[in-house]
Image (cartoon, rainbow, N blue to C red; front, side):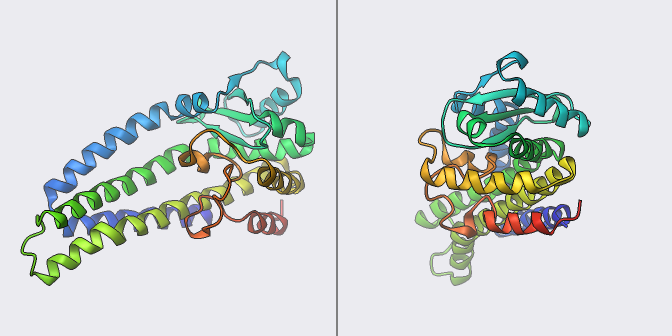
Length: 279
């Protein structure tokens, strides 16, 4: 169902892009498309290096943390994935993320806080979730969604400037003014809602993948509760809020206040779905 939901949301997002293109000039849409595709293309190929650098992640070897390393290796074998690189982030905020443009370039990163907080069973559930992201190629899917939303947002900026300088045609033309308002204000908001909905669908899918990989969702369920409580008491104080979707739980203070724009489903809803799974 979550795969189908992702496909439908991407289709709606693409339809929104085509609708925006029909209201705006073809040339403007092409310029926006080229700019955003180049920008997102670079981000896609280098996003793993950027986010690991941003959070000061240090690659570790087996002898430095055998338990952590062995869990990743065993889960990767079970999931039929290449062994990802293993990183530790120097913060006591409990959290984790996966990155890499494809399974061959996969990496998982856990904070020092989560490694100290969770039991082996709970950590296994979290790492199974992250490896599911790698297996499902969620970096690619979110990059495509971000690319489409980015084109829409870029065209929206052009439309707003066009309205300011009278580039949308006759200022007395009510139809032209409405089109500029729709493109400049409503389109990027709708695109953002669709983009975050795709991100939430991928989180549910990774939760389901983790439960199937470990054959028991209990570890992930208790881990999610602990991580959410830990983030409330000790949110991340460095990094960039734009990377929130990478983490298993929203890492920054106040990020979950507006559920409509949240990149993650509520933890309670995730737990309810996990408890209802039959694995």
